Length: 157
Image (cartoon, rainbow, N blue to C red; front, side, top):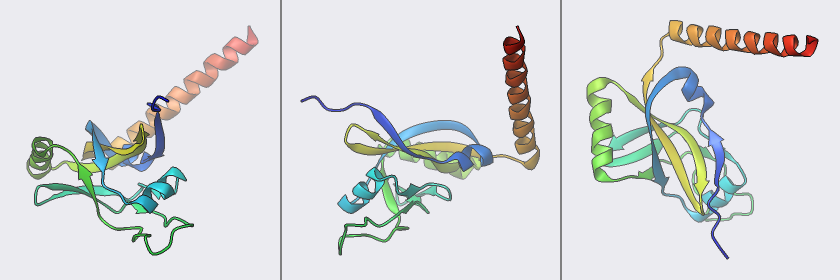
């Protein structure tokens, strides 16, 4: 039987798109234990307050919450533990340089399955100012109003 190749999105960090401009995004593997993967398959993961850091040449994700697996026992791990992300050394070094010099942040954007493996999309992000957030909200409202007007116009004719 052939492998499933669908990319099933498990969790998205919607707050990241509100708080940051995403300049670039990359895919990274994530080092997990068995009960964590089972809990992720159940959708019990939260990326809301997560961020990534580079320590000793390793890319780590902090603040990601994976709820303990309900049928698990002593093999359940700490829900808030620091997890290692898997990328090539050159990619990690490039991201670390951008974070140090240009003031960017590494933020997890989404968590998904690629085949049977769990992958994370990491974004190289620049923080938004308050006026940028207001501008985005105004643009979103204008787009919604325009779509509503078009829909009403089509319904009348």
